[in-house]
Image (cartoon, rainbow, N blue to C red; front, side):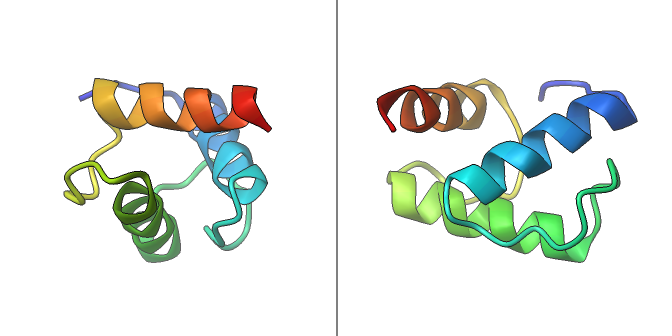
Length: 68
């Protein structure tokens, strides 16, 4: 798992929005909407949808953002 500060989670939420997901309010809090958005992103990326922002999810999110 990648440990994040609130500012880091804010960046993850912004990245999820850019990837077409809806994490709710971008507030740096890993709440239920962020969890659902993360799982939806994992499913769309074809990686294990465990709801954990780990190295594989981080890499897939970065890859998608860099491709777009």
